[in-house]
Amino acid sequence: MLPRCAARALLLLLLQAAPAAVLAEEPSVEELNDLRERLTQREDQRRPAEPWSTQVGGNLLTLSGEYEVVLDLLRRRVVGDPAGERDQLFLGQGIEAEVFYSLGPRLSMLAQVRLIMEEDLLSGSFEEVSDLFIERGELWLYSEDIGGSGISVDAGRLNFEDERRWWWDTDLDALRLQYEAPDLDVIVALARELAPERSDRPWIAPEHDRVLRLIGEVAWDWGRHHELVLFALHQRDRSSRERVGQVRRIEREDDSDARLTWLGARLMGAARLSSQHIVGYWLDVARVRGTERLADLDAISSRRSRVDAVSRRDVRGAALDAGLSWIRPGSGEPRVFAGYARGSGDASPDEGTDRAFRQSGLHANEAGFGGVEGFAHYGLALAPELSNLEVWTLGAGRSLLRSSSLDLVYHHYRLVERADALRDARIEATLDGRHRDLGHGIDLLLAIEEWERLELELQLSAFRAGRAFGRAHGDWSYGGLLGVRLAF
Image 1 (cartoon, one colour):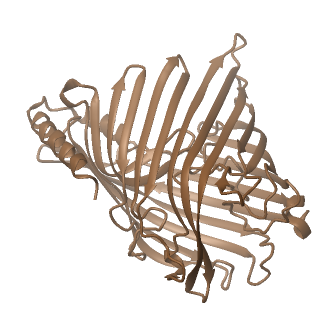
Image 2 (tube, rainbow, N blue to C red; image 1 turned 60 degrees about the vertical axis):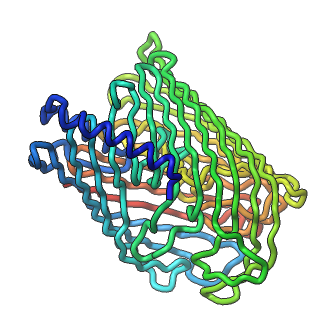
Image 3 (cartoon, rainbow, N blue to C red; image 1 turned 90 degrees about the horizontal axis):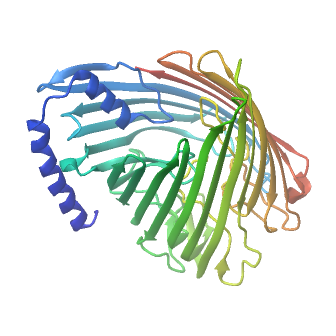
């Protein structure tokens, strides 16, 4: 459970907010709709501008949702593991429904639930999937500007999403406080998972089980269209520790218990030149510090593994992600962009300190580069975590019709330090440990959002393995994604 002091503080705040909501001047339907859009708008969700609504107890109740279907293809090389089918054709479908009820700015409520079906259409594939489950979405109470203080509070299952999704893009069970001023926004949150996320997995995922997180974010608009954001995340894993000889179910494996702190900053903005051309920029920097306890697990069957050894190490890593974009005014608003990202590596993995950067585990890396839809900005086919990696990016795009876009993006990947594996990537591989050239990727991305309730997305991707893949050097992997979202 969340600490008792946090629960008591929440209760006091809500007790203060509820009478104010009842006694305050009744907001108009337009004001309530504006409030709903502001509180529930998400980058990866589609909602109608005027969903079905009714009056309950003299207050607005809104029902909305979306149906999504995604067809995801990956033809990949799994170097060092020749067994099994190497292609995957994944079909995912989901229906999400949400209920929003508001007494006005002083007290609002949201509840979401999803029915999801996942299936691998290639029988016997490398990672065969066939699941049907219910997933809990956001579920919260929110009170805004309590007592005219500028402080807002929300509690429950909350959405955390930064603009570039480089830090976080996920739902967490949390208590969050937010202070808003004209040019300043401060957020502090305490998060810990309280229940399983999916009906078919009646346990909390090992990477979240008994993990307490303190999240901080400060955004300052220091100039028109220019922003400085400070980020902080402290994470402490209090789950049970693995012991040598212990046997665990593979899906419950927890090979890392860590106490880590991330600190970072972002500069982001845009300026219009005298020629009316627009130049945009971004710069993310971050460091991670802490300690980690590692368990070496060895599979003893298709379902179970045994802990062979346990070790401890310090963690010291740093990263940056920077780029520029240029938009020309006129038909199609053509744009070009370039970026460079680097996450530190560990040249001496046996010395007891891991100097490789790792991202928060809450990230998505789906910022995009100015199109109408975000996408994997380190490449769709490889989709790596920024750890022991340099990524050079160059691309171009343009607007289509009224609200659509087309982008072509190239990536060059290089290891910072020689290694035999990537920390996390879509293409699983054993590297040769001698070369740093990881390869090249290219993505073509089309997003169509011409209709209020319908959204179409097409992504095509290719990755050519570099010398770090050893015998697989020069091999190609291909990916494709077709997504449709229908709001109701």
